[in-house]
Structure formats: C-alpha cells, structure tokens
Amino acid sequence: MTITPGDKLPQAQLLRIGENGPESLSTDSMMQGRVVLFGLPGAFTGTCTNAHMPSFVRTADAFRQKGIDRIICIAVNDPFVIKAWSDATGAENAGIEVLADADGSLTRALGLNFDAPPVGFFGRCKRFAALLRDGTFEVIDIEDNPGNCGISAGESLLEKV
Image (cartoon, rainbow, N blue to C red; front, side, top):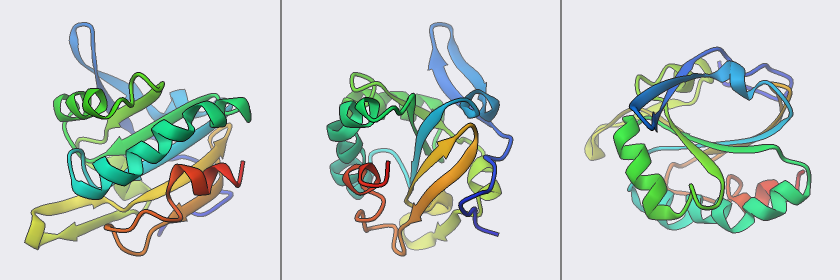
C-alpha cells in the first residue's frame, strides 16, 4: 500500500557517510518538526541529477524561510555513491541531507518501490516529494513515470508549504 497524507513515516534505518565511514540513521530522527522528504530512482541518473536534485538545491533557502527544519533526499543506493552524488550536485552545500536507503526497506515500507529491468533498476524508489510534520505526511506527490519531474520538483512542493 502506498503512503498517503495522514500516515506516519515508517521505521527504517538509512545510511550516510560520517567522519569514520558509514553510519546508520533511524527515521525516528525525522519525526520532529517540519521536514521535506523527497525520493528518487538513483544517484547519477539523468532526471535525478539534472532536474530533481537541482530543483531542491534552488529552493532550499525558500523552504527554510517557510519554516522547514530539514530537507532530506533518499535513494536506493549505497552510502558511498550517495555521498559522491551529494557532493557533485551541491546538495550538501545547500543543506540537503542525502541518505542511502541501501536495502530499500524504507522505499518498500512507503509502497514506492518499482523495477525497471531494461536499465538495471530493481527495488528502486519512485520519484516523490513530501511534507511531514512531526513524522506525519501532510502532502505527498508521486510521479507517474520515473523520468518525469513535475509535481515532485522543489518548486511544486514549495507552493504547498
């Protein structure tokens, strides 16, 4: 079942690269305040790199001006790839936390997993953007096609804050 407004963020463990290598981060840490959460099929892929992430880099300051506490991106990749991609896109400099859902457990719990065998995608995350308040989804916009970035773009979500 796909997540809908009013649902709570599921419990899962995500990964990031810290000072001493990979470290685990629970979704419990995202349960406080107003959080923008967006997900995408994969680091270094065309639409993710050229449209989706840049839309949130452009709007990060505007989200904060509207009271958003954290901006978090998830993708089904390993934490090393996520770190390199975060650096390459300027996400970290914009204050966007990019986290690896390495085993896809959060993506599956959200009901947002999909496969695209011709491009080697298995258990990847559908492209989405959401607003959460204290761990509850207020808004969630999911693209019909992983190559599209319209309703899930930073500018589109910013209009709903």
